[in-house]
Image (cartoon, rainbow, N blue to C red; front, top):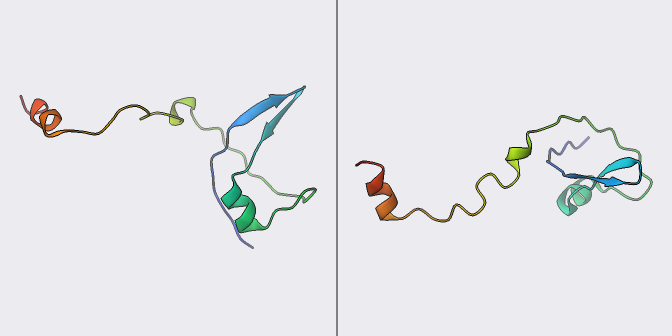
Length: 68
């Protein structure tokens, strides 16, 4: 049995909530349409997605500013 761990984002579809698995997970587990899957669910904090987005690269000046 192959076990793959990943984080997925849900979306609302009608009255249901759906999660889409990334391509690498689908390929690793050879998932096909209508397969039955056992899924362990754990909710992670929303701040995980994009937490460092837009932070940019650190420069030598940034390093010097931390030691003032």
